[in-house]
Length: 251
Image (cartoon, rainbow, N blue to C red):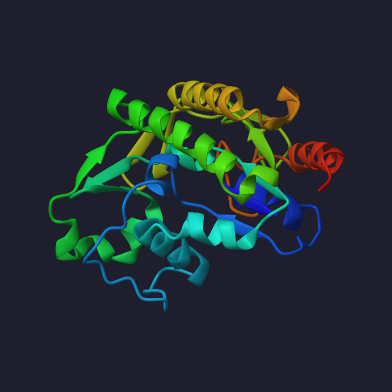
């Protein structure tokens, strides 16, 4: 099994007390970044820099070196799950390529290297980023159909940012419209939900992926979530609903 996505899919197993078998997890990337050229001239060692866990550093290295798709092909998953929650990050145009401007990239310190000196931000909500994503969705569709992944079950885990959450007393509270993505990087809840809807609709139409989504009543944040409060850290019943649907698809 493999995931190209975020913790909303990866967390299914630990939250429900399960252990995934032979899982490849590709995160902190974006479809345009996956198909871009490797960024040359960057030193990104296997040993993580201070402040990053090994898996976080591995995700950054894969995004910079563009190694994820080769790793995916070598893994030969029977099931490949996409979710687009990590598509909340801006892109960064650097020389002849694109990288994902994630918190992990910021925390790594790699952006202080000369290779990043000409970098510019491509805002997630911009028309430029939307066109890059459209083009990359076509590339991903061709990749899935013309490689050994043609025999893989493609699944799209559709979701939205929650508009409300449960506090520590179990009472429902409302998220602010402006959400901190990471330090100094703010996103509009409505704008990102509109992006997610657009991405999901396009991807499903292009790929014919099987689609799973939780009942809207379960798209609720939880202050007690293992990763803390966020519009995409949901109540446990959300994960149970997705798990039930994945089981019907052979997982």
